[in-house]
Structures are given as structure tokens and as C-alpha cells.
Image 1: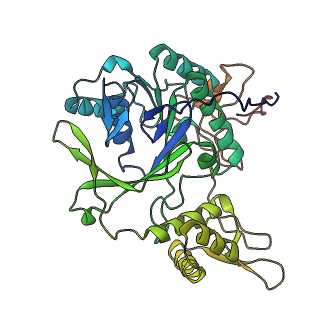
Image 2 (image 1 turned 90 degrees about the horizontal axis):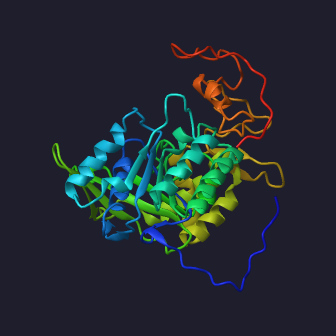
Length: 399
């Protein structure tokens, strides 16, 4: 594999948008939220709008390009989870064309999106001529260790290749880390490695506005964390209105005034992002990052950092060197050399999609319950499946 030299004299085409100014064609975008906040409702709404002659969502045009929705998160074998929401969107917008929407689920032997499944997905996108592909969700489709950058980068390599080869917008639904005490939901960005944010061209974060602040309504705050090809808009509100036994409306909504200090929110976001993945960052570097990101004076930045450290339960550590500088890390970060190691429960490890020599070999492995990292006390396989036995690792590259 080599490097390609780019012709700087060639005309640069404009970026086409599936969803105007928010979801670009030919690239990977990520939409993250906590479980149960309404991300599936919104993404199925986007998919349905892509089947309409003149689609529109939240005041922005949706390209009538058709959509492919891949549901790994709530697969039931009959598409019930996705089809239920599509029917409710269809009740509000009956001019959509159901034949321009393809819904895919894994079959009984498929544990994740392997190369075989990705090839089938690419074929389905080409056959449908779809301009939008939604993968729900990253965690379910790629059962890997999301804290490790090289695992995440490998999965995104295949997602980027899918977007480039088909020209479609690939939108990955993802999860946010569970907020720690006092932390604003979504402040740390996406769950796991910062590699997700680095490799996606657009990253969107959805958080539920406390119902007491909006008279009990279901309102989400939409933050655009990253947008490589268009200006990053100010946070905006989205209201979901569910008709009893009928349609669902997705409407723009005003966010409650004073619910968030935008400068402190930016400060919290940059601090928790820098500490993501077990990082240890010196206090002075965090202060400088807050000054740049939130555009505040040094004393304000220091105050924000002190408040964030207390609210998020950050761990202060002393670094070697002159003056014994203070640094911070997240409470779940691994201990530094010399620190006592906290007791931890065993973590599960499930491989990403390997490049097997035998293309059907993954079916045997993925049908078995993933072994524990330490290989001890591995759980038994579900009834009817072969027991998990230690095997020698096959040759070949990992995703």
C-alpha cells in the first residue's frame, strides 16, 4: 500500500449533503446519546424523510436519496423496532416511499459487522441507490474494546471505505459514557476512545433536557461537537411529540434559558476530552486548554477547572519533576506506576471483525460467548450453543 499524491490544481467539488449542513455525503458521521433518550426516533425520522419527494427535518432539507437502516441494537428477526417507528413517521408524512427504505438485521449466526456482512451491506446500498446508511449502533455492530484507539480506528476504516465507495452518508448511532456525579451528560463526548471523534467528519451529541425545565415535555438538546464541512451551529432544541397509538412529531423547540453556562460547558468538554482514554494531563495544560476553548481569563479558567474536578470526581496526582506539578485523571483511569491498583471486575473482550482466511470461520467464534480478558471463569455458552473452549489464535490481521 502506498500514498497517493493529490492534484492541487484539480477542481474541488462541493460537499453534497444528505441533511443540509449536518450530515455530509461520502463521509462518516456519528450521533451519540444515552440509552432511551430518543436517538432511534430521530434517526428513523431522518431515514423516512430521505424517502420523501421533498424531505425536511427541523427546518433543514433532506435529500430524497433513499436510506438503508442496519439495526444491530434491537434485532428481533422481523425489524420490529425500526418498523414500528417508521410506521409512526409515515402516519405524519404519508408521501414517503417505503420501497426506498431498506431495513437490515443480523441473522442468528452474526455477532458483528464482519467483512462478509460489510460486503453485503455495500451491495444493498448500491442496489437501492441509497444516499444514507444508518448503523445502529457502533457498540452492537463492532463488539470491541472502545477504549483502545487501534480497535476503533480499524472499525472506522471500514466505515469510511463504505462511505467513499458508495458515496453515501454513513451515520453511526453511538452511546455516551454514563455521567459521573455532577457531570453534564455528553460532556465527555462519545463513549470510549477519542479516535471516534477524530475520524468522523461530523459528531452530534443528544441529551435530554430535564422534564421539569420544559413542563414535562420530551425535549432534547442537540449539540454539534464537530462539523468539518460547515459552520458549527449553536445548540438547538428538538421536541418529540408522541400521539397515542399514532404518529410521532419531530419539531424544533426552544431550550430553557440559563439551563447551561455555555463557557463552562465548553471548559468541561475540553477537560474531559483530554482525559478520555486514561490520559493524565497537567493542571497548567488543562487551564491553557480552557482559556483557548472557552475564551476566558486565566482566573476564570482556574475556577472552572476546580469546579469541574470536584463535580466530575477527577483524581489529582503529583507528577515527577521540579515543583511536583499537579495533574488530573478520570476516576476510572488506570493507576500510574507506584499507585495501588483498584480492584476491578473482569472485563469482557470480543474481537472486532478479523480478516479470516476462512470467511465462514467467524460464525463459530461469534456464536460463542466472548471469553474474559484473563481467560479465567469464562461464562458458559447459551443453551444450544457449543461450549467455549480455549483455542489458538488464528493467523491473519485484525480489523
